Image (cartoon, rainbow, N blue to C red; front, side, top):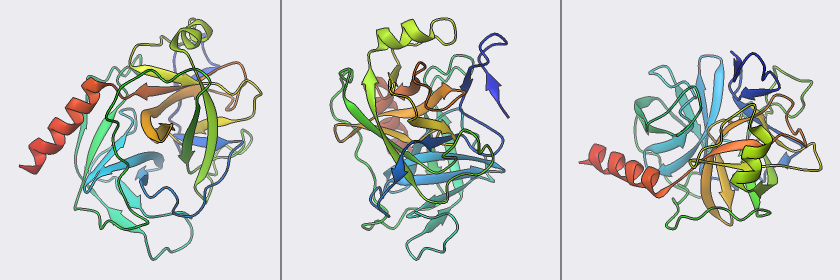
Length: 255
């Protein structure tokens, strides 16, 4: 299922397709298990990524479909190879926070796993940020995910976890570029590879955006032609209000 922002904005789509949500273009294979917080999420034939943030909680994008048929894998690197470190989960509950499906504002979803993860070197939560700041333009940020590594290969996700490094751009520059295609709110941030050929694509939705060692956002949307040098990738920005909501939900469900 492709979701278009408008009939006249066909070059800029929400990153949720029939088979995958977002994937990595122009990146490289991650060192196996170097990102122990990564979660692979599947609901029917749609896949997304997520971030383990607590023993039994995963953060992902609100536009990623979650229901009781959803499965979540932790501790996995290759999707086709049986991994002794792999842990599999169903979903107990899921929550979104003021999500606007039309604009993708607040594109954040919290998913409660069916049971607690067994923590180890290969399965370990990523700590949530303790300070809140707009990422300085030019800061190199990281995105990782499984999926399509070429714009020509629509239906085949990558077997291995891939990663890519991208420079952040200001919200003002992002808004100026996308003004006829997408509204950029204060709850969003953007990256843009001006050289072209690098970026997340249809299959990485919900994965973490990591800047200077901290998770700053969640992969949300991007250009139809992945790695377009003129159109940015968009992320839900983790604000102090989102973090208060996340902590409140976790505490409430743990009591």
